[in-house]
Amino acid sequence: MIRATGAERGSVTVWILGLCIAVLFLGGLSVDLWRAFTDRRILAGMADGAVVAGASAIDTDEWRANGVVQLDRTQAGQRAGAYLASHPEWNASISPTITPAAVNITVTLQQNVEFTLLRVLLPGEQPFTVSVTANAIPALSP
Image 1 (cartoon, one colour):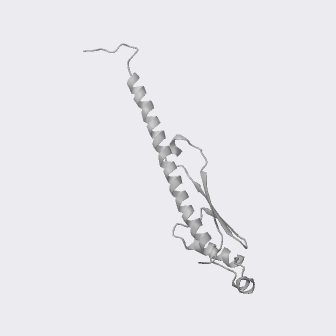
Image 2 (cartoon, rainbow, N blue to C red):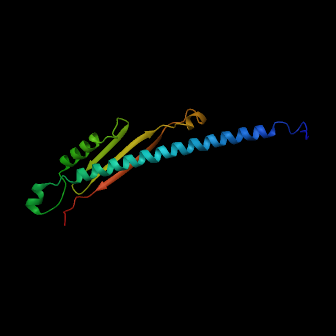
Image 3 (tube, rainbow, N blue to C red):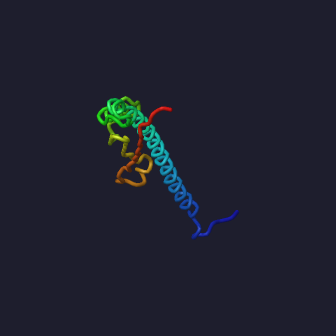
């Protein structure tokens, strides 16, 4: 039977405890990063759909009079906003910025993402912001 000396007692326990804390931190980091990637993917899909909806608002009077393809700014903003409001993932925590111009429409969406598992290890941390921007230019179909 091997007996531990007084200097070696409990060293493995401390090492294992430190390893558990490190694994918990890495697990929390991966869970929160995965959540941020998922939220960003959802926001990107919403922004892409909104600019496509807005870019379909062609100013027909300008097209008929001069043959110029440009957006009806009011209609483009309304269509993009209506698309966002009807999206199943839409909620009040998302901050939209819809910028229609004559030649393009830009939609920027921002959302704060709270920490989940990392909140235990990093108390008092502020949420981080996920932001996406999409831009579309109206064009004639071939």
